[in-house]
Length: 366
Image 1 (cartoon, rainbow, N blue to C red):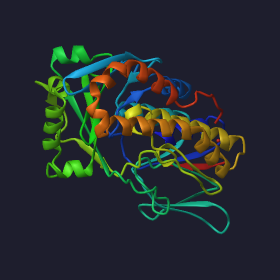
Image 2 (image 1 turned 120 degrees about the horizontal axis):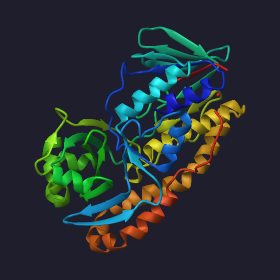
Image 3 (image 1 turned 135 degrees about the horizontal axis):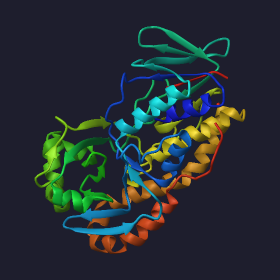
């Protein structure tokens, strides 16, 4: 997503761009699919009207634990849209903008040549060279550009459900966050009258149920009856959940090499709890593109980005860790009482800065 967003913005400024896209066609990804106001504005500037794609407005956020739940109105506009639909629209916009898109190709290695060019070696041995490169490999690390290890060893899952009519009616317009020992999950409606359930859990808790996602899902419903209520009579729409491991929450890249702009999850990984993942991806793409077009060196861009994101990343990490520790669960009734006020403050403070920017000689994004 971040690579595609940067490619669109760059090409519109008359700069040739090659976008190397690993997937042959857009697919479902592990993602909460929450679009904050900042994300919606960035998408609008890119030419993406999420309403025409069927995005569902999100007006409230609910925190549920055990049998109790508390609700707060969001202090900004928000929506929900599947990544597959959004990525399809972004790729189409990139092609329409004149971006050269190489689909179903993966970068195996990226290095600087003696002439100062960036050289990307693809899966079939082909080589692509450019003076500037954007590293946007999402949650997958590229050899030589590995992010730090995930000390908590998080595992994330995602499943789509068709809820019962009564439960879908209760859920519509809300994003629900659910707490349970070892992690947290979120469920919200997406286009097509279905719901997206994403959950994360530390591997040591998953080991207690033999690393079986179905057993852990049952345990989640046992620990959080609110979720059990939502899933009563629900029809799973995938054969099995999509899963991913090694999620270094809280990571912000410190440095980069000249001519290499790191964006998306390669720049920063905010805890899923905040619903800011898509917003961060689009924000980093916009900032990197603006820096490139302004002639700002990549190391300076990376330092500026880190400085700007650090406060919200720290707050987001504290909030996520705080809600998931034992003392917090012990005082959940109090947490639920103060949740509306805390949520409004946290939501405002963990938003990415809504600054507008311009966008990028020939670049490789991927």
